[in-house]
Image (cartoon, rainbow, N blue to C red; front, side):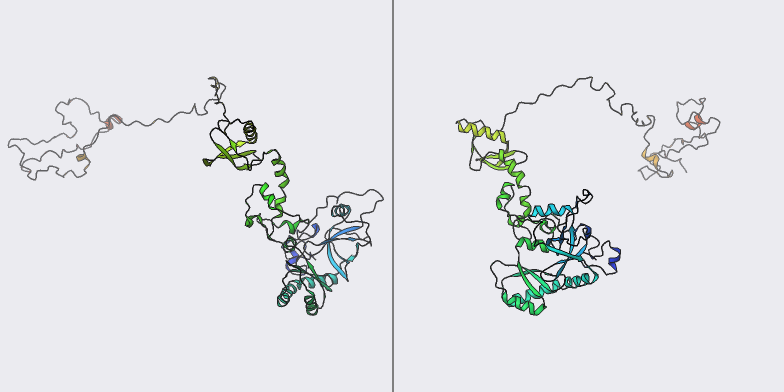
Length: 462
């Protein structure tokens, strides 16, 4: 079984859900149903004094947000979430217990209901399987009945909107909820509906806020509508509530799903009213200064800041605290004008910090780290001749195409018979070879052939 707002019970999918409804398990019967007008019983775990009986009235919730109180005359042990059969006119109705026990006494006192009244209807019994089946059949035809009733109302040219239909648990009565701007004569409509659906018809007019509460929806805040979940008393909302909260009077943003001003505009109104008590009334008052006349632009209530602008500089907003505005207004009443709106503050003097501030281990954490030294280039490295980078020794870089043009007739060829001997004429022949390789390994002979000088001309006749 489940609540009347969901399809209950017998599907294969419902076996894995905690209550057995098509709402993916979010329909919490123990808290009173589909998250509409749920009540937390904070007195549930408190025991009654010895000899005192539990309160004999329970609160029962029906479709959407309809609730009523019923007397438990048979002393049934009822808990929140139990499906029961209650007295109706005519027949009986099926509902779900929302709260029971001592909390019902407080709820009745809050709503102004008399617990000793004799006209309180009775609780018959806990719902049986036949009662629940008939109740489910009635719920399944409610939407089709609403569409058919709308079609009939349009044919009869009635200026009304049927927004919801609720069948009684025993399928003997149907309540049609409608909204209309003017008075509607629906006597002919009742006759047609009674012949069409073979039940007793009751027409009940509701307002736009109650209609939104019954239909439900998501508000601009991203949550479910307050009227559909917990709000029961619909107080009037005026545009002055938006003015006190410094909100722009945009009907697209201030209106809710019902087309009226949002109920949440009244939630924080008292806080704004208390904060505005200390603010001066400057709507028609202008501040006089030597620099010019200033007028009020806007107010930041909770920061206690008012913004003014000079008449010749309307784009320059000057923030002033409330005390400064009061001070200028008092000066203007005595005929005194301040030099300007702003408060002259003394320049801040920065004290010099002592030099011994970081002597207790507060120095830099990286002061002991060694900096990496860059590798220095070898100073003995000499730049190579671009001609020596060529790997082809036979390449003649002489631009003169004639090889014998610059050769003298008695010139001797430059031939070094000993390749290990230096060609330097000033070199000492008895000095040992101290090349880099010989210094590293003196026993290893230096068999590297001497590089030929390709800038020299070849021997004559070769």
